[in-house]
Amino acid sequence: MVLATQRAAEGNLISRVYVASHNEIEVLSAAFNEMIETREEAERALLLGEEEQRRLADENAVNATIGRIVSSSLDIREVYDAFAKQVRTLVRFDWLAISILDEDMEFQHIDYVSVDAIPDLTVGTRLNLENTFVRSVTQNRRPLAGTLHPSTSADKKQTLVKPIVEAGFHALLGVP
Image (cartoon, rainbow, N blue to C red; front, side, top):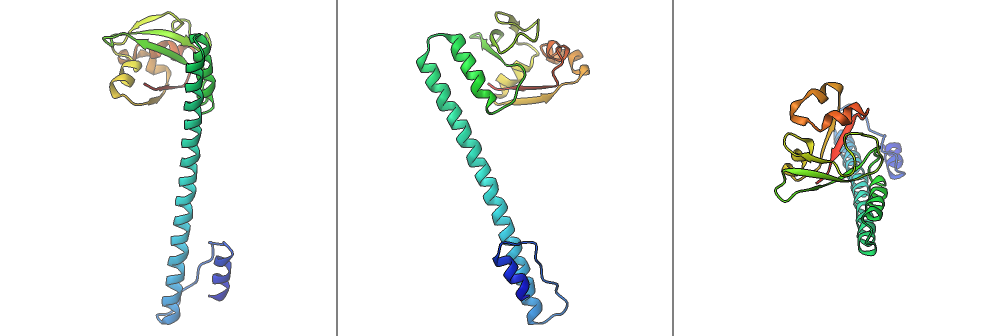
């Protein structure tokens, strides 16, 4: 019991005390084991909290940078390029598109692509939003992610997914 307590005090939370009888030592040993488990849980929660804080700090830094870029340039292409660069610090991507929706939210106009990787989805392309991934994102008003398979391209509910699958992409993330 003494050795396990010393180890715990040094930060070694692997130590446990074996309980063999029903006396005061057993009660003390059980309390010790519970104390160690509580400390482990607290340390896990602290680590998760620190990770969340780092993630939020990264997002805030990106948002601040994007805000500075938007307010400092009148060239929309420059703003989009800077935006793509900043998004890449948060999410790895091979292709990024920015679409502008019409007032009635029936059509999207592709206003930016990071690279010309999908022939059917280039700058200037106007697409009906009916039965599209983009429609799902805008209706839900939250990010939507999905894994793509060749069979997905045949899904009539997701007509814009077909050129993305055909270009060899395996996942899709939409952010309103």
